[in-house]
Picture 1 (cartoon, rainbow, N blue to C red):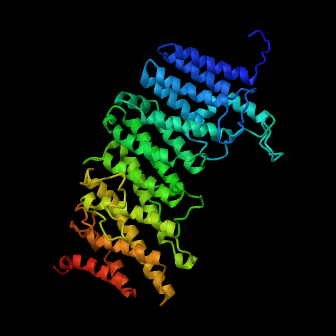
Picture 2 (cartoon, rainbow, N blue to C red):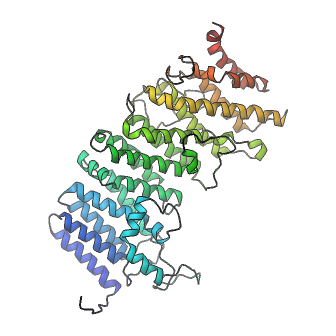
Picture 3 (tube, one colour):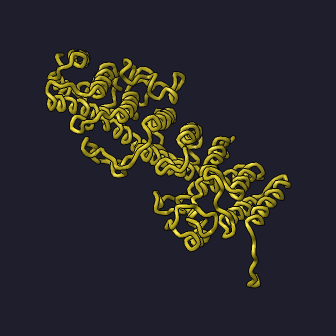
Length: 484
């Protein structure tokens, strides 16, 4: 305050932070002001000019970074108002999770709320980094000094992600969940996990699958008092799911044509098995969340969810014959998305998509998310949203198979293409469509087959006996209606 310069060292700052936690821990409870002060001091010390930003092992945190996470845990454990303390700690952890994206602001998603909040909280420190840590790598050898390349904070981000998952998993009551929702921290946490999926800094898919979908189901009881915040949280889940699937943002716009030529993404995606786990967990939780009437807070998200499944069901309809590749990974993702569209269109979840080993049945699609004890009846509005997308993607897959068969003549198509068409036909033949799913067709369990009648007739020209038998089964289901 008297324009005097105080010189401190890394060890002194680390000791100061440790002693602050010790003093706070000595008190039975922390007030909201105490918790806020502790978290603020931890952020200041974290990026102080004299703090060593590199550990000997890139995968480990520095002493100061470990103390910063210890402060967050202390706030959770000793807050007088546990709901407020958890919200404050979770918000601080969410900022630490996205801190690497703020340090490297050009990476991705720098316009999200949580990134903007983190940028403001760390603005003075990041400006100092711009001077002390030049972005250019003048040497490949990392130097443990403030003249080294800009610190990454990757290890801290990964550690904060674990702590954040623990906090969200341990919310004990509706009051705690409501506080997290109202403060916007739940949305920030979802986005923070999603950013790691897009530009991976740590393996977060397990955390996302284990924490987010089950907790979203528990939030159903808070729909009335926190409708707006719950809507934002569900929309964040949809955005993260789209990013995990590498879906171009414009493809989620209503009215966008998801034709086979347009469903391509230049973004490097996650592994197919990881994408399938995320899809199964999120869609399973979404189906379990809904009721007979469409919840207001989920309306916008549900439109995005159907578009995501529709996009996923297009991927394997790419002209693989022309490309000369066998897109097995895309095929698995397509089967998962097709399986959910079939189940959501059916009258009953348990009876949908129960085909052979080559099809996506009730035991293989979403088995970890929607079990035998879950709600089996599908609400009419869910089927009405999914059925048009199912018909469009089924028609695309069947037409693509016919057209590509003509291109190759007597040569066989890749086995993955045959498996996909068999998947579609087997499930079409067995699907008991919801009577109100397709408004422009007759209200019968086979209305989806009537909508696809021209596409099924075109398949008769294909020289494949197993496919022809399945086409026959589909046509026999509607023959009585057509002839009558």
